[in-house]
Length: 255
Length: 381
Image 1 (tube, chains in turn brown, purple):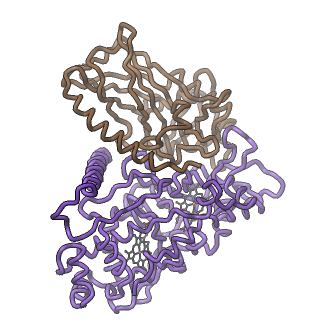
Image 2: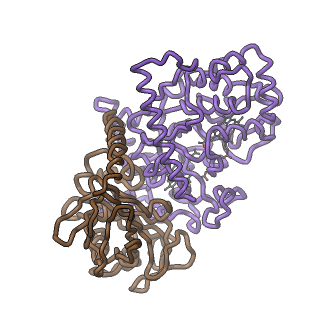
């Protein structure tokens, strides 16, 4: 029952004009930007949708992927002194099917050195139930009507090990209500790298998202038994795996 | 390539916003040298995505839309003056023709079923295979196609120029009584952009105090939106329809609105492959074989027969297809997830006969009876 009000439109127009205004701040010497890139991989192989060559999980199950999407939100950058830059209102949907979605820019980052980065895999619980549903949060097939919440990670494909008809595998990781909350916040190891934000120099932070890690870690997921996960306790198991090591910092350009 | 498209879209969006700002400034301080044509006040229903992109080189005007409506119903745009866009896209059938496959001016069948024309503002790619990327360019195809209206647009333009009706209407809409092919296409597109439907019985049922759905319709709604096992509840039963025909944005299509203007997605819904390979014909990518755009289910009770080749006559046959006959080798994986077997379960997805009836009952609530009677969309002649 999500009849967006007229105010939503006005709000989004206001936000945009606010964004235009704050673009001016880019010129101000104390602010810079960071480019973020997410490369989706299965181990050492770059993901290709609908590829006929299967990927293999740590437990030995084979699978191919037709759809892969996940939300990244609430990005925080940490300085060595422990203070933080928190990007306001940041929601990004990384979609393997839309190349441009795998790169985005964080504007208005104060110049400085950042030794840590933290982000949420998913959408915070507040935003699941309120706020403007525009941009990356536009309702569509990453949204559950019945939970009124977002699907944080969607992976679909086929596996010969799956007991579904002809091996369909469906993983919809979402849900924000206890005990099946699947929102996870990760801080990939920086390995002594620094994100150096400078005037006229925009570092590019390159992450790898390894889908194999969804199925291994604290919980081993075998497709014979788990092949249709749509929230609930099984989704929590996958979310815990994701938190334990799906996202790694690969390298930083422009330092 | 995709990246640069998005950048272009982003620019278009920004310019659309600037246009909005300009338009609203004009309202406050009327310009003395305002153009002759009156800006058309396009109202987007609030439940539909607001991130639509209007082409900056074809701003909608009251005069342009009204001219487009006449052209849409104008038989002079066909070779033997018998057929208009409205022949295959009839308002009473939610702008379809009731035929299995469309039949052109020479009695020859098209390879596909005529599509419903509704909420086209939210379709970045048109036709069953997404081959057309704007309404302006799409319209030339039926006009000139030998198995549709079969007349070069330049000949149509000459016919219109000779009438007393059209030159002044083009002058009012585009500032010149000399008719051009571009302006015919632009006016048609402007009219098509006004074909907005947002008042189905389902939508009315969601407004507080609106007419409630029957018990069967409500159960059908749950089956429509749910996947089997939804929310970690292994007993939840569903048909997964919403997975592709997204009801969350009230468009009942798969266009993804997380990017400005939207991105069309194509799926294989398990129909047995035929010579028409859909999206593959456009991209030549093997994975696109048998994939089609996901058509809207708005007004679906009015638009039989169904699918790109009109192979199903009724909604019952459509539901039988999804439940019992999908080609499991080509179908999207979501269609491979079954419900737990219960008494009387049928087929692959394992809905019961009662559940199938309930699903169809829900599909019938997607009819917008005001849309098919709206005088602004009707034949003006």
